[in-house]
Length: 94
Image 1 (cartoon, helix red, strand yellow):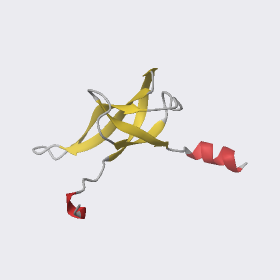
Image 2 (tube, helix red, strand yellow):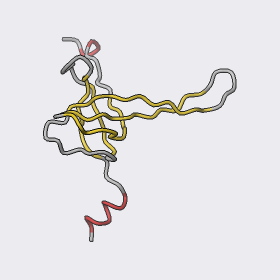
Image 3 (tube, helix red, strand yellow):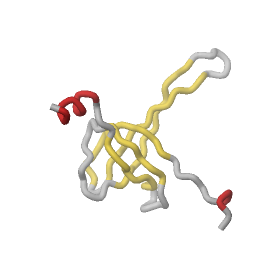
């Protein structure tokens, strides 16, 4: 295969807003867009269902999600890792 034909996977950063499904979390990804006429920035958000095999991510966690082949009708992302907060880093060092 030629390297130029390989598709790079999307990696997005978001916030877990629901963990009620088995092995699935819902992640909200915020994005800032510029209005074409008024040149102001506004926030948009989109929710993605992401696979969480072990059930280790919960509501309020900031996570990275990666695009993978479709696992179901609307689940085509997988949670890669949790983003550490500054407060969590200081607790680890103490």
